[in-house]
Length: 407
Ligand code: NAP
Ligand code: MG
Image 1 (tube, protein in one colour):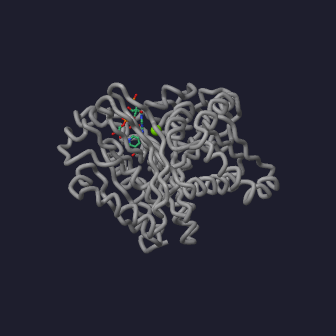
Image 2: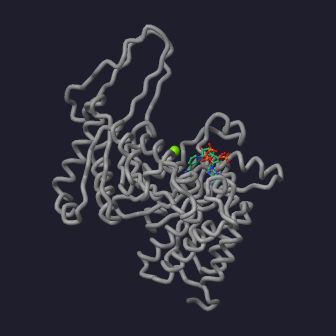
Image 3: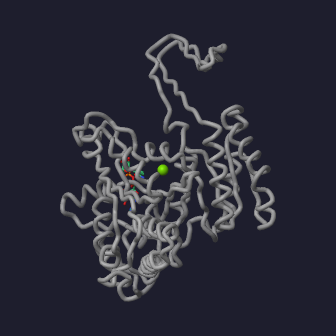
């Protein structure tokens, strides 16, 4: 405890601010839930779209470097720019998604776990335990290159060896009219890190690993993922898994989707980058709302970046700008902070910081379980005599009051 009775965080946390409604909530969470209780050094990077533009996106790279250096970061949701956003914010160009930049930098795996509360039942009635999605966070379409083919002509895939050997080439398609092509890649070493991260995290959480790709169709690309996972499992994890009574199970992605819908949950489902992007949103919304999904990017070197799985909640932000009352759920943002604080506390050997993170989560869960929640959840919750819809700020205030009582 520090002089003012505040809990001291030893090493600076890397904090990345973001855009729109999540930026509004980010400031409230810090002001109402963290700063009153913590003496917390921050290394702050402002990833607001306009600031990324002003720095030619250098700020994103600096933030990623800081996470590498200090080991733990927490990130607000950010706009991934497209043509509409270029016009809206008068940008120099449509900068790459900050998440893609940071993921590529850390070569990490993203694990997403739904936040379960007693009074909201998953829409898939068989699910009893959370499904953790392990999303590979490198390569595939997120660092793909694409060409809009203007007309008749041939397209080829070419590999040119650096040692001067014969190039490898394959025809993609002989176009007779306009079309599109895409080039994507992955590396053996990134897939190995992905496999290791999944097996490590599953052992940590004591759950089975399911892995699924479409290797019947993609017999080189997806098949390589399957081979590497199996090789890594057999060589380094099989014994530890057997000892814990856990299993590694590979199946085709369509089969996996069908089985997951009939399962009780409680497994780590490892997925390629795009599959994980899509299916984590499905699992999140089946468990309540996108705002009830935590997300952590874990690098193979043991660096962690925590964030909410949802975006910047653009529609709510436009309402907020018009002065209308919003009821946006800050749970995932709160859990991003508590995840980061808990990990920081574990790394620093400061159990009071870990206990503080637990206390914030308990207060947040208790607030919802006692009936105080934002509109997205009220529509899903079991009826209760104390159920009431609160505003964005009202929810954070309610958690803060409860936290102050419980600490
Ligand atoms: P979104 O922010 O995830 O929101 C989509 C819808 O989900 C919202 O309109 C809202 O539904 C509901 N929702 C999401 N989070 C909520 C919350 N905390 N509380 C209550 N409801 C919530 O996706 P988007 O609006 O399509 O995308 C906005 C921007 O976010 C885009 O520019 C995108 O690039 C960016 N994005 C960033 C990240 C990231 O940084 N990690 C991830 C995804 C998207 P209702 O409108 O029905 O209430
Ligand atoms: Mg997604």
